[in-house]
Image 1 (cartoon, rainbow, N blue to C red):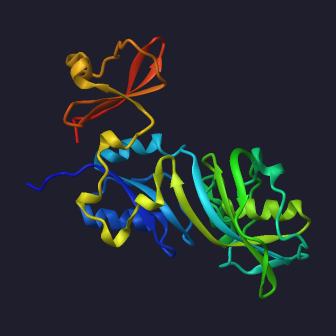
Image 2: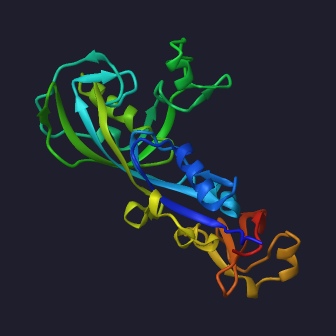
Image 3: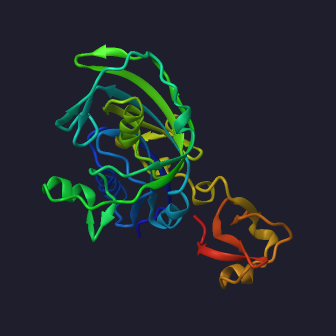
Length: 288
């Protein structure tokens, strides 16, 4: 009988593949349908895509909200319908005179309306489906995003009919980098689109530790017990085994928002949330 593998993959998604394309590729590699990802990355974007395999899919919900870091290039002077370099130009604007921008207005809490070409669902359809079918795009409410840092990495320089510069942003989950570029340009009285987006980190998972899709093997899997690095770790041997086996709340002498129970061999048995003075089970496992 074939061994069933479980875990998390830190994939360096290539440009030109959708997140779903990556999921399908991983399904073929591991011969399983139980594969999912922790947050969509645009087809034209590259970088960190976290993918769960088998029991690893049970952890994805707890990774989707992680802080993310991107590097991107903004082209000032042209807005496209997709807000990136693949779309058609729908508006032009003046070229700014500054080589460096003051980005203080975008630090902290920032209200962002998702772009038309996005996977946000309204009335059962994704926004990009409305856009591609030339249908009226429903109004979507602005979302509160927290930007911890937004830094310009290079001065603006002329590229054909636009001025281009690179930036780095670290923000809460839900940020659309393409829309951020347009919002920054709008703040300066013009328009823009992105020419490159590269996701450098999702939480503690970085691009430098990622694996190219073509190089993925079973050895690339991150163990379940290591997939939630921010969860406090309790030893299985110090807990009541019967409580864990039967999915009962745990009474442990310290308090932390989330807890994972791992044995001395590194096997994950459960993740818990602190609630009503006990640790209540969220997901149970049978080791790796």
